[in-house]
Image 1 (cartoon, rainbow, N blue to C red):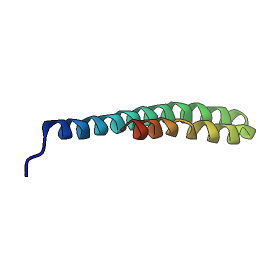
Image 2: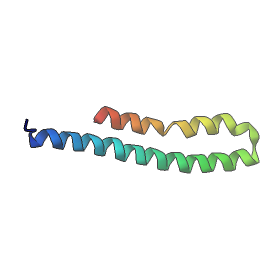
Image 3: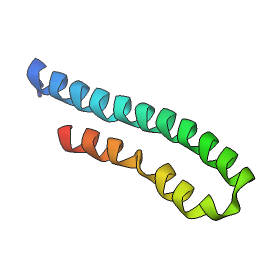
Length: 68
């Protein structure tokens, strides 16, 4: 059974969309996490805000999934 070239390219593009958005989210989460831990070291009451800001970049992966 032969598969058309366009089917393979669609699958490749979907993989690139999800992969690139996952890498971008991981990078953003790392940067925000470092800043949040630094802020929490000075003021413990910033834990809630730091936690919320650390989770926000996960929406980037959801956008990549929607595009894929």
